[in-house]
Length: 97
Image 1 (tube, one colour):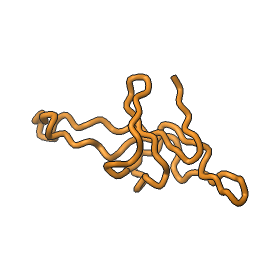
Image 2 (cartoon, one colour):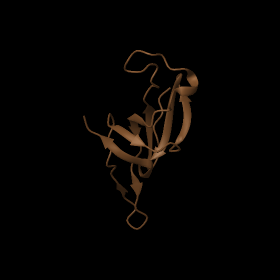
Image 3 (cartoon, rainbow, N blue to C red):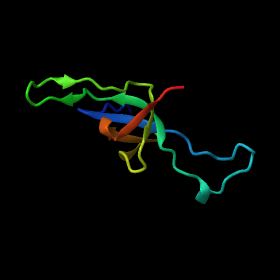
Image 4 (cartoon, one colour):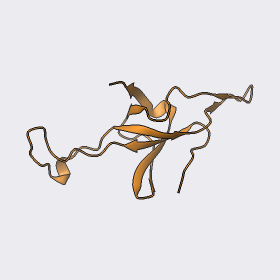
């Protein structure tokens, strides 16, 4: 199934949880922190300007790695993948390697 966000919504695939430390120790489930980073999978049309009726383009694009807050977005499960649907305002930064 393919999902296309509407309007000012963005579909983000959250990064995987860290399973073990850099030194090789495996972490118990209770110690794993939910990642607050992910990759933009798909974007809507943009933010609608109610005065002109035109859409403003997004700052982020498909494939961008992004940083977001702990409670950003709505979690959805699509094709056995856990994704987040959020607005661009919930994205704090684009990660540039």
